[in-house]
Length: 115
Image (cartoon, rainbow, N blue to C red; front, side):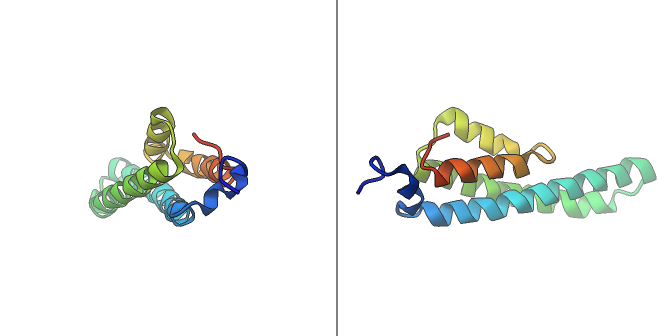
């Protein structure tokens, strides 16, 4: 039976299951990191202490780059549209959005639907 005949099996397509797992982990890591960055920005501008931003900022930037790679890898393997791919990539830049998008992406990929 092919993926076209049984879309629920699309997650079983070569590499998709691993790509989804990597994406999910990074979506949560980037989401938490972005929230930490927001707290660090409050400390910087509210309490005039730039130390947390100096630590969290570059760390979040690196982790976001990894998130972009994993999300793009999943997009290629799951054959997403350009629009769906771009929306998922941008989701890591807005606080809390990566959590919601991760759930939607997981449901769509497991159901064998494209974004």
